[in-house]
Structure formats: structure tokens, C-alpha cells
Length: 318
Image 1 (cartoon, rainbow, N blue to C red):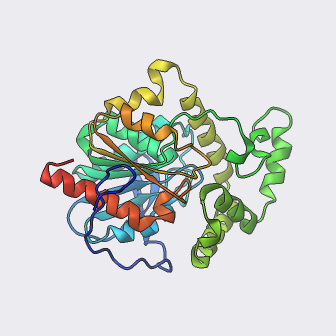
Image 2 (image 1 turned 30 degrees about the horizontal axis):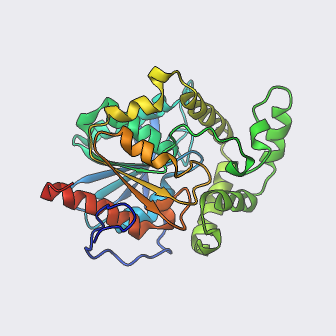
């Protein structure tokens, strides 16, 4: 089956029934470059997939997609340092390059090339890994990757006060106000920002996110990690031309599937064609009624697109 939108092959293979009540996959800690990195593991056969979440996210963002692909790959979803349950080491600078180095070191431990997935900031990080270490990446899947998108609009932030949070003098007061938000309020903000149809998110998943936000509120390092990673991403967006993320993409050698939601509020779908044109070997799938986290809103469709890429590569028709 071929997507009528873009010509991306969609696999017709049977997928596991989508069960939105599936709990997050079990996690263990891995010592990586001085970090105690929390990684959730989805058992599966054969090749290995590694999943990298976006800014403010965690390994749980991949629960449903990893389940959909579990008949085909063994999955590892990483909590980046400062996110989920991975406490950052002292001095960690939260730049994209630092996060990419951490992911690289984890993949090296697997001792074989992987199918690498990244969403949002995780997409930018995964592109860096693929560009710098092509020997580690079999295929690359980028879901709404955080390529430079400089549209100034408050609809792109979960709270209109966020742009002031790191401004001198007023920032501290704003951060105190934001810290007083309840876990439910933070979750509702995230749903409105990241999903095209937040009312359709299963209540089970909403409750999981609330519990995760409660856990983050108790972590002394979570707020600083989010703020510094945001600054790191912004620096990458404003980097000189020679170091721009747009210059990273042409160095990616792995076959790459790019997935974008039409209703993405954070990084416009209009960046999709340029992203694919910048890649040596890329295809674009555009999904209607989908926001910034297609792997969470449309896990079965994303899984079919990924499997379609792998099948086409096996047939040498990609």
C-alpha cells in the first residue's frame, strides 16, 4: 500500500492490536559516559531500534510505537540526561552535541548498527548521531525533527510566560510561578500544544503523564535540565551557517523516513520538504489531523511507514 499523500510505502503486514492501556515498558539503568542512563526496553526479535524523545519528553513517548514494532525489532527508548529518570552528571551542558554524544555512546554499547528514531529535539539529536557516526545507523526515522523554525508566536509554547522564564531580573519570579502549576495543569498544557486532537488521548495515557509530571516535580534537576536543553536547542537554531542543523542533514548517509503532522504547532510542516531535500536519501510522510508527536497520535500509521521503508530497502526499491 502506498500513502496517497507522499508516495511513502505503507506496509500491509499484520501489526499487534493497538492497546492504549499498555503500561510503559520496563526500564533499567545503564552506565554510559558517567551517566546512569534510564532506558526502557521492548523485547523483540532480530535488529535493534533506539528511540530518542523530544524536549520535555521521556522514554514513555515511545510506548505505543515500540509495541507496534515489537514483532520486528528489539527496542530501547532512552531517557536523555535530565529527563525521565536519568539524573544528569555534574557539569553536563545539555547542548544538542552533548545529548548526541550520550546517544552515540549508548548505541556503541549495542555493538551493531541500529534503526534510530527521534522526535522533535530527539530528531535533531538523532540526525547529529547519524551524520557523525554513519557506521552506527542502519536507518533513520525523524518525527517532526526540531530543525530551525523561527516563527514568533505564543501559540508555540505551552504557557505564554515561558519566554520570560530565562530573561534577566524577571525570570526567577516567572520560574517560581510556573513551578506552582499542578501536574494536571502541566499535562493539559502539553496535550493542547503537542496533539492535534487532545480530547482523543486515552485517559490511561493522560493519567500516566500526570504521574510522570508529579515525579519530575520532585526531581531537583528537572527544571534546570529543561531550561538548559531549551537554550541548547535555540543556540543550534541560531548557529552560524557552517554549523547549522541544515548543514548536518546532507551528511546523513542512512535511508531516512521523515514524518510530519499537518497540525504541528511547534515545528511547522512547511519545513518537511526542505528537510527531505537536504537529506541524501529521504522520504516524507505528511499525516492529517496530527500534531507534533505522530508516534503517539498515529502509532500504527507510523509503524506501517517504518516497516514499508525497511521492506523497500530489502527489495532494493527504496
